Image 1: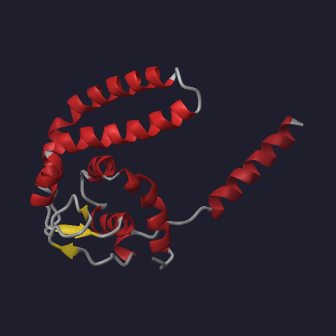
Image 2: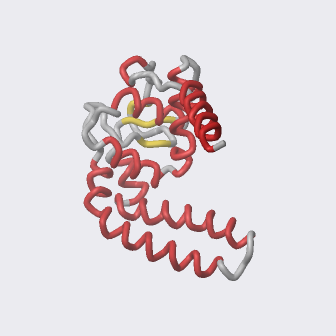
Image 3: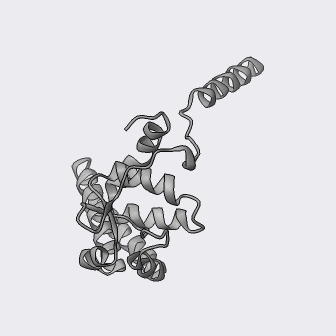
Length: 172
């Protein structure tokens, strides 16, 4: 019986791996054209020449202190939400995301500084995600830059993978 379950589990796992969406290599994805300048809704963390924007550098230098502050804030929020079942969890999640974004914005110098130090922008997080993957994912600090950018634009965290899967399939 154990052998049968193990075989069945392995078969399901292999089938799931075989049917998982395949991401195309970054260089083979058609990157959306960025808006040159900062008039879009979402600022690129990379500049036109492929280096990180000044707001990203500022955020990276402040990250250690913010991580500690974020942990303390999350613990305090969780304690407060304990007193309100279900709805408290949903409210706490929303408040936590907004507080996290506020902390991240403060860490990088604020929205005005982000705009001031960005030379590429996008009107959708999906375009930002695909562009970053196609053009910048080989950058040595990509994972850290992506994480910081997702803190600034929380919708990017949910949109990132699906947008790249669509782009890998040639869809947008």
